Length: 189
Image (cartoon, rainbow, N blue to C red; front, side, top):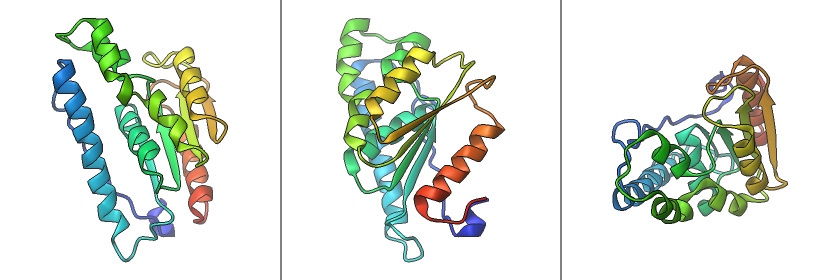
């Protein structure tokens, strides 16, 4: 929908946890760092294209994609805006809960902390961030949504969609499109 109004998109496919499961501190720290480097290279491809206005770049991610995006957005400072849909605050929140990790939980939490979204989101300020959460998300409780909102600071806007599950809903999609159009200076849908 936004392409018709001049937006250019790049869809990135990560590997962990989609194609490769988390397993240990050594593996997971290296893989998260590798995924962020891949995202950096992908965005560089857009950044250097002559038909792309690199002053109007935004990153949008859902779930793990949002978590990866927060690291890059916090570190880079170049993109105009970030949308995070249904992210968790820490990698270990999901990796340790849903996969067999070979390291003790306290060691894993500590090792992954430097890569957690709540560590990198404060560095994104004052750039705008839209945080989208579902009221009935089976994976991201309200307390985690609040923690991410606090970490993102005053330049972030948090929206919670009543009755929505982890994949959010049509209202969230419409809000996201309008918000992105405003941030990037393209005509709204």
